[in-house]
Image (tube, rainbow, N blue to C red; front, side, top):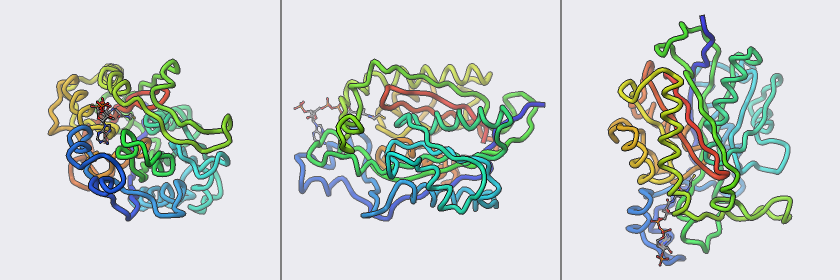
Length: 323
Ligand SMILES: CC(C)(COP(=O)(O)OP(=O)(O)OC[C@H]1O[C@@H](n2cnc3c(N)ncnc32)[C@H](O)[C@@H]1OP(=O)(O)O)[C@@H](O)C(=O)NCCC(=O)NCCS
């Protein structure tokens, strides 16, 4: 018998304000056609004034708990992947803990930018497999609209806000790739690429800062690294692309998603795509895609999923799981 971390609930939250590409035409030298053709993005959600990452994360977590039919005190730990916490500290995860009314257990943030949810899933899995937790809420939540330079057309049209969550539970499996739950993980980072994607603020400047990105350089790294990490994770799980039902990629750019699927030899009909409606929501994008994909009827219990993501750091990784 093997312990497996099985998804027993998921949910998401999107702020109500939807911004279409055409809205940027009033203030920037850009247009809907450019944004759509270069990125696949058509619209994104932006948080309301005063709406924070922890509030959106709490809404997504509540939806995941409701989906599982459980309450906050049934959970041992909360791991929140975010690069846009409400404050430098305490962690946004502890704010979610309080907002959920959870009076026991522990909570912390994971910061691996757009790869954050994959890193958080791997950490949650390690806690479960080592017996330190039985149920872990894993959340990705971001308000990237707060770190945009609204005069920089090469970045501000690409990102959005939102949150998604899954609830993992320790269950026993047979130790085969037929088990439900997380079957393998693969994490990587390479700090030499820091200047490709970063925020120019923090304790070194005393400001929050703005996102800066050399988009075409990030693009150059993305497809190869994503295909490699997904392949490594599949090998570790003992599965091949033919076994995969759904790729659930980080939603940054449709061309990266297509290029990676192509390299993995998987058709786009087996890829969950939400980038057109959400833009790049960084660590929130994979749990949003999982929840939306499930609601659309794409992802069903027993399906084999590969998730993969890359972001600032650079940091990248993949998780293979059976839903
Ligand atoms: C950002 C991205 C969409 C840009 O597409 P691209 O084809 O690489 O375009 P480039 O950056 O080479 O820019 C091409 C031209 O478009 C212009 N441009 C940039 N943003 C624009 C916009 N919003 N509207 C119109 N033109 C724009 C550039 O200024 C450049 O003009 P120039 O040739 O006169 O200098 C693309 O590089 C990308 O998606 N990269 C990956 C980013 C990413 O996913 N990051 C997150 C990882 S988590």
